[in-house]
Image (cartoon, rainbow, N blue to C red; front, top):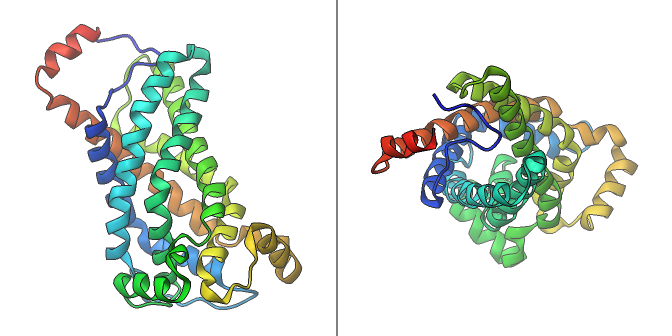
Length: 286
């Protein structure tokens, strides 16, 4: 058995990263969509408004059409970027490599993730009945830029989120490998993924509230940009409104992190085993 090191891991080709990322994204989105819907409705409700618990899978099919390529692009960019940076940086700066790769992957996938998120959240809050209708009416009323409503706040939330979550996950895996002196199994990857997701989800909840408000406002435009949104929320609802939906968000992302990273690592391993000469390659690495 190979001795563990800081950089030893299943090295994925870009194509394998795309497949693994797309698979993990679809599995976690399908499993946890109702929790995400509740979280979105909590955050979108102004003041003490009540939320509906019907139609919790509203918009799932259309959302998966965006989640699949977005997750595939993210991991397809993240994996090779991570490997390049790990080769360039000394081992004691591996966290910087993971942070940077996470942010770059998030930026690359944002071009698909933002329209997907806009359509999903408008449907979750009952504004549209189907994804095609949502796209058509958003473009008709708000122009193409309506599909990118809240893009700045999305990047403000998701670039730090992606960077922090993947950095925590990768660094915990490194520490665990060194302590256990072996590779991690599937349950261990899932537990570490859950912790990384829950912690990052809690820290970034205020940014998520701002992003949700900007994305679901539609043509009403009650919020004038990120700063205007913050000022309006504080004035009308108080600072506690920035923690709206933190319970469902931490639960959703914690469980989601467990499923996503568990499926991601298992898929990467299965794909690596199917490579021509995989056994010979593993032997050489030892």
